[in-house]
Image 1 (spheres, protein in one colour):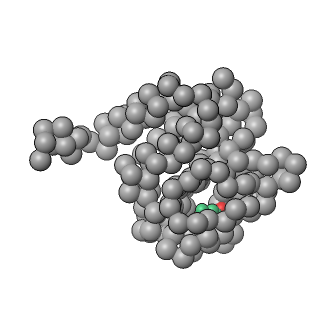
Image 2 (cartoon, protein in one colour):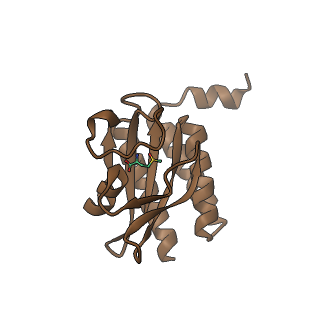
Length: 164
Ligand code: SME
């Protein structure tokens, strides 16, 4: 095992998340294109957090629905109406939502039966949701409050890309 790997393994969850956010900020610093940055964000989150699926949905105002953006994982639903599912809930209520067991969320939209828990966070620019970050775990209780807080931080960094 190389010393770097030993050092990373020794980090606490909080320290790993600080590194993760730094890594994303560095990626964004070198590139202003939204799609490129969201694609790399999905890749980093999928790999570092060992997620089943992670990706973005853009708000399509004309159609009043979400449309699938860059993601990592199996194919997913392409369009989600306003207010529908966990993603629609987050869009409508302008807040992140952690669903420990998707089977207990009445309006959950199942794109893949292997998805067991979900964390969704809106990206808000000028008080309007422009995009949604959606992460799925293949385990029940796959996310905790630290994940939720970190996703909120990542989404606020992404929001500044939309407005810059
Ligand atoms: N489960 C989501 C739909 C999107 S997928 O999980 C990729 C929802 O209920 O909104």
